[in-house]
Length: 205
Image (cartoon, rainbow, N blue to C red; front, side, top):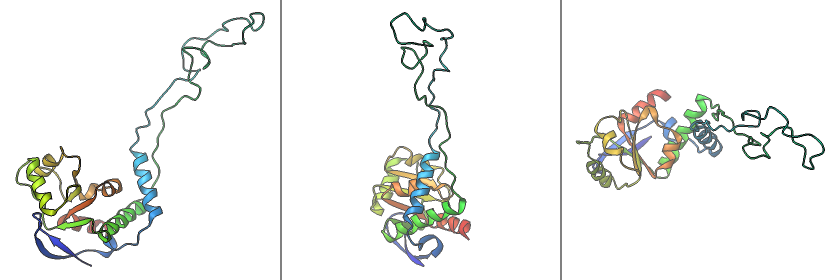
């Protein structure tokens, strides 16, 4: 499959041949939903913790006699009904991660990239270079491409590109090896360099 290639300044630079495995997959909504849900679930820390009646200190003896006081019977002052008592349904630390097969994850990325191409949300440039680590220099490049909300994908997003993009909310940069389904779907456009596409094609070969 041939797609249009541009320079990072927005000028046409010919065509590029890409793999149909990556950019011509049929959309699978259920697969994308499952992988995105699993990815977001894996990002949850799960460190929440509360004390149940068995975790709260004290309450080792019965506070008053079972009968004769006129009050409701009570076996411990650490009951959830009492002040300073334990939590009724106490939250405990847990792991929210969901198992997703590697084949499913890779297929979901390919499905998303294919859908981005069909919706004209994918921009392929020959090379992504930023001369200085200044945010305004990166913004001038993205404005030339006609994008204001985009994920920039290169083979190596370190250096000036990482420094220039880290202070922006609507522009982000990442390596081809670290793209994820949530980032691909979050932004309006995805700008990919030619070397990042070749890197992905190697992993899908």
